[in-house]
Image (tube, rainbow, N blue to C red):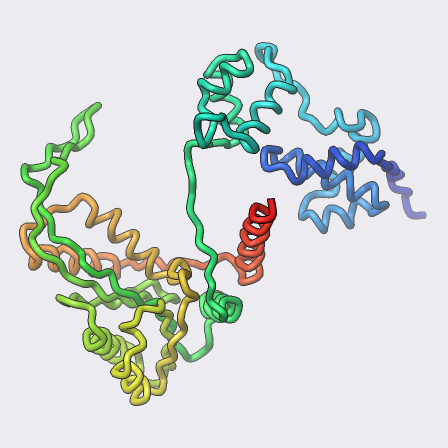
Length: 364
């Protein structure tokens, strides 16, 4: 005879409780744990089973059962973590919530964002307390990131195309992310750099001497992480075609070649079109307008800059070229491919969120 399982506690929520739970899910200041528990309770209120909820939220059934019973016994108060050992908190939840809400949704009359001093004075608490609240909720009002929504009419198609190349590349083909890093400066400090010492970082003069520039063409092979490079004194369409010939010689003739590029005018000249007609195995895939972040070779350029160029000194273009060549050779001895993780749907959903936020602000 089958053993009867533990009966499931039925959950019902009032309109006020539902409003609070939905607010905890939406609010950016809510912890991930509290938002998850709120989702569990709302799902339980729909009459769904622990197994169904666990599968939908990618969690364990025991977790669902725990918070189902906790809510049934203690309602909304049961979703908070139990107090931990230590000194008793002297700041009330109302003050914490007020600080968080004001930080997120308001600004002082004389500034674009709150400071710890201004919020502390308004609520009669210390600057350190405001700082601790911000740290606990991951708030940094003095920082501002940037974004740009692409106006490309083929945005969706291009995103799906590039993500498909990264995550499901075609068989019998080589995929390269290609771009140029123009005007790399050969610069030398006006005095030797002082070496790092205990308690003292390396120190370099703020001024420098310019000793010429060069342009770097790079083709990052997505599958292996190896990079084909070429150094030029310019980045004209003729230089680009010369680099394409180098890539062509490096890839076995039996393979198709897919090249990911940005929308630089150099990549679309009649000279390049003529070259493409003579090399039918090459296929160009362009990133969306303002979408060069989708070209993985940019990640490699970032590594080159931070690991080599940023703190190097070169007295001539020849010395700079030799330094870059050596760094590339060292990279190719043990290449590290960059793995693309986000699906096209995740990217488009994020973009839709930006657009929705922009439209909401415009209507407001």
